[in-house]
Structure formats: C-alpha cells, structure tokens
Length: 438
Image (cartoon, rainbow, N blue to C red; front, top):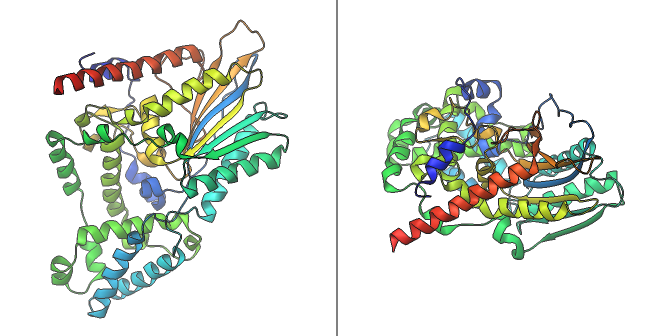
C-alpha cells in the first residue's frame, strides 16, 4: 500500500462531535491538568455491561503503567530549586516566591534518592486495580489457574507488579503465579524504535508544532507572582523553562503524601493550567498519537506489543483454563498502544493541534498513573459459538474499530484479523519507504 494514511481514513472508527471540555474539567479538578502525572482516578461509576447469555470470562490479557511515582530526574527538582534559591539570595523573590521556594525544598527532600520510584499512592493504585480485576472477573481467577506476570526492568514497574500480585494472592492463595522482569522481554515490553522516532516531527511539521506551543505559552503573570523585579525574570532566568518545571512539580504533588500538606497549583489560574495542559496534550499527540504531520504512524511504535498480545492470547485460549497474562510498563507504551488499537476516539488522525481538545483527544483520560488496557475474553458453554472479547481502558469499556456482536462485545476472530491486517499494511508501507530511500 503506497499511502498508509488512506488505510486509516477508510478504517478509522467514526469520530464523535465533542464540545471543548478540558478547561471545564480543570476548573473542576486542577489535578487533571497534570496529564501523565494525573493520579489514577479509578473506573467510572457506570460499571460493566453483562456478557451475552451463556458467556463467561476465561482469560485476561493486560498491559498497565506503573503507579504514581516521584519525578524521574534529580534536575526535575533541582533546576527550579536552584533558580529560586539564587533569586532569593539577590532579594528578587516576592512573599509568594519565598513560599514557593519552601515548598520546592520540601518536595526535593521527600524525593531524595527516590527519583522515579513508586510512591505509597502508586502501590495502593495497583492493589486496587488488581482487587477490582479479581472482583469483576472471578471466573478467570478461580482455583489454581496460572497468572503469568512480566514487568520492565524499572523498579517502579516491578513494585507495581508485585503489589498487584500480592493483592491477587490475598484473594486466592491457590493461584499459580510466575513473575519476571528481564531484558529478555524488553523487545516488546518497552520497545524503542529509533528509526520510527527519527521520523517524528519532520521539518514540514515541526514549525506548526512549535508555533502551537508558542501561542499557548503564557507565564508572565506567574513570574510576577514569584519575582519582584520584571527585568530580572525577563533577562536573567529562563522563564519559560521555570514555568514548565513548576507546573510539572505542581502536577506531581498528587503522587506524593505531601499532597495532604501543600499545593503549587495556587500559583496558576485555571486558564494558565489549561494553557500548560494544551502544550502537554499536543506533545503527546504529536509524538505517540495519530498526528498526520508524522503520517499518523507514531502509534506503530507499539506494534510488537500488540502482536505479542495477539499471539499470546491465541496460545492461552488453547488451554482449558487460560488464566491471565499481566504486563507492567510505562505510559509511553500504553498511550501508543491505545491509539494503535483505536480504542474509542484515541485513533483520531488530524494535523490540526488546535482541534484535538474539541475532538475529544484529552490525554488525562488515557494515561494517568496506573493506566491500563485489559482485553477480557469470553467463551460460551456452546463450543460451536465464537470466542468474544471486550477491551477496557482504565477499567472502562471501550468501542473497537469493528462491528460488535452486541454492545461492547466483539468476535475475537474479527478483531484479530483487523489488527493483524493493520500491522501487515504498516510493514508493507515501511518496506516501500525503505526502497524509495535507497
């Protein structure tokens, strides 16, 4: 196929019409503006729809992000801390600036030598997700069935996995659990496709992306809250960078036990949080979503993971009692996987970054801390009937890009065929691109 984008246009799930919602969401809950720092909210109250008559769940294939964590880099704390400390030494901070400095010190002290590690809240999130999985699908975890769990080699992911497994064992100590975290599995658990990433934001699109970010960079009022000298913050510091780092720290407090004591959201108005969020939302869409400025290809970075989920499901479904396959990794896997699978509206393809909010592509709904995709497989007592599957995103039922049997239940053979064909078209597209470049 010469143009993969045409394949997307023909097959992408029909888009719904949305009204702008993110600003109202942020006004209701500032934490939502944190995007990938948003603490896992749990599933919606509407629950799950019953399976078709005669069908019961037999197997779960899962990929989940680690739970809430500290910021991953020492510089995530230290750059803002040093900037404010130096300004304070020169007498350039306002009262709000000094108060902010004290809060940043508290955050830095709490995170000392724990950069990127799972927080207490992150552990709780995965225990809760595992408990609900057990309670919602007890047939899958009945008796001494096998649960195979794998994690990336990052400690926050390993501990997320272990908290989930301990919770499952608490409910059923007969489970046969295998668990591992090895470089052996990183080729699909956290694959970095260097060649595909080189094509992200080519020159023809980078200007549009940079212009979008520039239009939504608004930090002057915040700087005047912090500093008593306009000339100082305009000429002696990188105000754009400081605004971003303080917004990032503010967003991550919700992962910490310090959330009960302090906030940095008081620095920002709801509109400023929204402007910061817009930039973050666009960054994730452009790098991992269906941004046509990248030929809508970036979600294919998770093609190995999707293929592995398909082949392992095929294998496990041969067993009389399949059990569950649980995988623990990162948001840079969950986000493109969700877009690649075209769950709900996440397969959206457009080149207009100003419209993705209005069209419902709001990343806080996709990849909070602890986000997860669960494929739940159902069998009928009547062996002649098809295996069905439904897919949950963050424990909520989703629509898939094919025709359902009923509600949110789909024939596995149909979904399997759709995804394998999509992956095959991408391979053909890649091969033709390679040949043209020679």
